[in-house]
Amino acid sequence: MTDKNTQLTNDDSEFAKLIADNQYFKIPKVGEVIKGKVVNASKAEVRLDFEGIKTGIVRGRELYNESDEYGHLKLDDIVEATVIELENENGEMELSFRYAGQQRAWDGLRDLMKSGEVLNLKVADANKGGLMVKIGNITGFLPVSQLIPEHYPRVEGGDKNKILEFLRKFINTPLQIKVIDVDEKEDKLIVSEKAAWEEVQEKAVSKFKVGDNVKGKITAVTDFGAFVEFGTKMEGLVHISELAWQRIDDPRDIVKVGDQVEAEIINIEGTKIFLSMKKLQKDPWSNINEKYNVGDMVNGKVLKVNPFGLFVELDRDIHGLAHISELSDKPITDVNELAKAGETIKFRIISIEPKDHRLGLSLKAPKEKLIPEKVETEKKTKDENKKEEKAEEPKETKVTDDEKEAKEEKKEKKEPKVKAEKKTKEKKAKK
Image 1 (cartoon, rainbow, N blue to C red):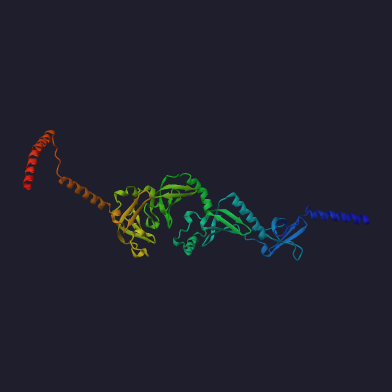
Image 2 (tube, rainbow, N blue to C red; image 1 turned 90 degrees about the horizontal axis):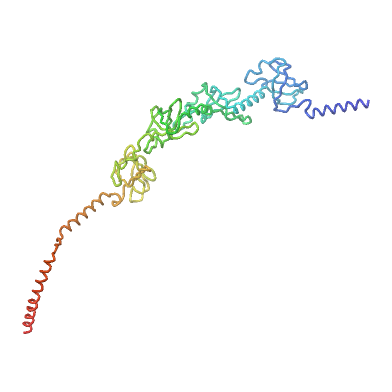
């Protein structure tokens, strides 16, 4: 009896050790995905057997996910389920197909992000920040910043309601996207249309180089410049500073959507192409001295009034600045009191810097600084006066040596006679 009890105890110890070491049956944890065999399936519940040791049950809302993956189970099918409770009221594990499906879906999304596979998905919904797409039963977000240029909502003033109205047009429209961020804990899935587009764009961009001239159509005008479509759905940006040589406050004053333009590629960064329209135009400052000179009085149209002065248009290409210090001899508290935008005023040019495309204007410049032509006139007058004075002076005559000797002889002959007359006068004076 004792030997049998000892043997039983030893067997129990070995069994306990196997369980403790997880060598016989690995006890799952809550949240873990495990595989089991279907032993009973109905519309209300599904029972799974795990290696003949433990039974689990899937019921209620945990029975089905949004797909039909678990809708047609039959006996002996091997399926995955997530443990949500180790033991319920009946001593069975409480399981979920829903969580298992999501787990598998997130694993699949991570694989998609790593592979960079391009997906063709329909837009499910839109909000003011972007679009929503569905990958399986998980909703992904496509931010506005990740749209391709052609689909970007270029709404004047950034009106959010207009942006939403624009984005809603894409609902049910298929877009090519890539998965760029997956965070299961945060339930976050970010996708990008631009990332998928750039892969194709890189090949197209490689056909162009800096210095190439392109012809295209203005597709959008913003506060910072204009977008030009050229080639095969290629798009480049002409920054406001590259639209024209003159100073520009609003690109809409220079171009509008639909205009056909020609531009030069000045930079390529990845898939971004930067263009210049003004590089194909002659620089009007290169021959400015043929039109304007320092000291000239000119009529200028005030384009803009700033606290530091006036921006003035002399003609379509040449603009100048009348600094506040050149507007009046008296202290100025408000520049708007002196001029308003749209007014035409007579200015004097005080400086021209062609290389820097700068021209200075003044309303109060000193005469000696600003009227060089008058100074030149005065100088000419003085020179002419000096010439006249010289003309009135008697001319010097050249005397020969013979004439000099004759004069000296006459002088010597006259001297004794003069002395004698002088003595006679002195005697008479004494008497």
